[in-house]
Image 1 (cartoon, rainbow, N blue to C red):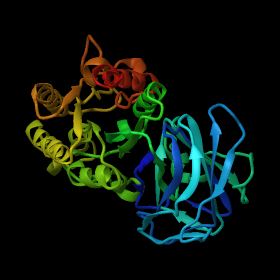
Image 2: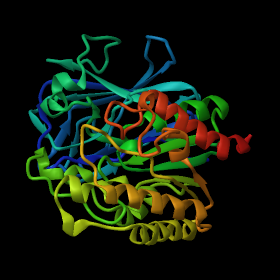
Image 3: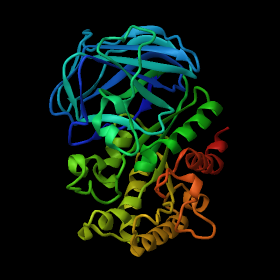
Image 4: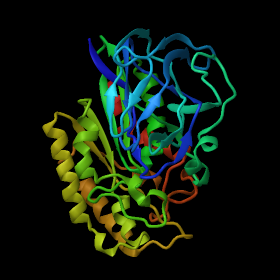
Length: 397
């Protein structure tokens, strides 16, 4: 028997209040692929500046495509139902006896009574493997149903963004105590990972094929770079802090803080190439040699920790509506060539080969991105997931 994480995302440091909540219920639904005997939740206020008080936290479960929530249990910390999370704090709840079978969804309902400015939260755009809905003006944690609002109705930051994220505040991990032998997979990267179109497609495929045997954790941060911390963007809310610290700095903590994954699927580099020009920071310019050195450090860390790590090639990003420097494309080609030829990683996923236009490899295929030429959509995410499946995961059977 051991504790395994069945769901985990990284809280984003927005460096600003994305919205203020009060007298509201947040209900989040999660895919689960583990058979568990006990449960615990990791509470998070990692980048908050004030305490976050969760008046009530309730966990339940439901069958996929069913409506009724069962096995409803109140979660406590130190025996108390009201859970106060100090600024910057993260900690696990009390353990609860709570049986659940692989394939049964987890439902967590949180009531926040006090007025609270949310500066840190987990987010997804695909919103398939997990998603939140909100009940305004009351505590609905014990209710089967309520009038549901979306993240864009609660958070002005989300409403103003072209791509509408789905938000979960106050939590960052769910762990189950299981007697099964479980493989842990960490998908590490930037917005292409964080948005979750790729990771959700892979998660669905893997969970359907390996019930009770594999758990997949997303460790993506939108705008993240391999070599440098968040780009300063004066006109962006939070001034770009949400892009996070450099992958070479955050990799060990974000991957190994609570887990020892057998597999890591790594995809980053596009922001190292694009940000210096796009955000007018020429002093942050880089090249393929520096990117290769950064990735080698990450690979070495993974191997020292006993994980197998696979590197993904950087996909095309050209968009006629936005000028992209020729230098960025040249770096992409040189870095991808190195990835394909190196032997330090345990394998590669040649995403670029499968996503680029045959007649013009600087562009992603038209029907595979969300409209910006850079970020894969649902269809693109499925193709990426299939690359991973064909290259590695199907061997696990």
